[in-house]
Image 1: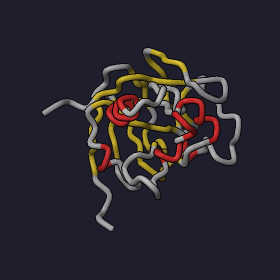
Image 2: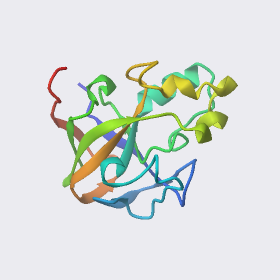
Image 3: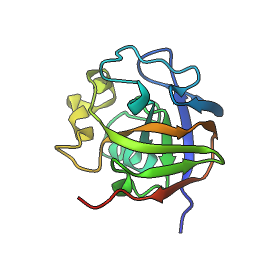
Image 4: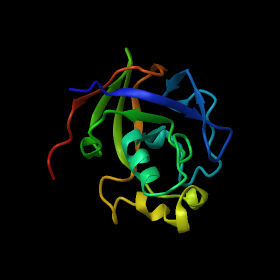
Length: 160
């Protein structure tokens, strides 16, 4: 069984791509140094952290899309996580102290269009392609996250 880990940590001063860091402090407001340009759709306590799957990114690359970690605006690119289990209500422990709760799916933003062939950012739309969306989370227990930290699903959301 593969251990799930933080593959990359990403922040920006607003917009995409978000650029990699080796370590970051995460509070209920989000990642230190990260900023969102449009707070109507991004950021806030229920969208403090945006996550995405390395395996989903690699599959999109294999289909010819010029997407890469951080390009989709995710703060944490995770590897080895069963992305189908990352649903609202799921609790995840990342590293030694960070505890987050998945709150919602992140709609594909028009700013992502350059990272998709023929404007196909809709491939990350949860309603059209379930399991391919990024996920938003709230921070239940702040902490420091490092690249290669272990990611653990500690509680699964109840079945619909």
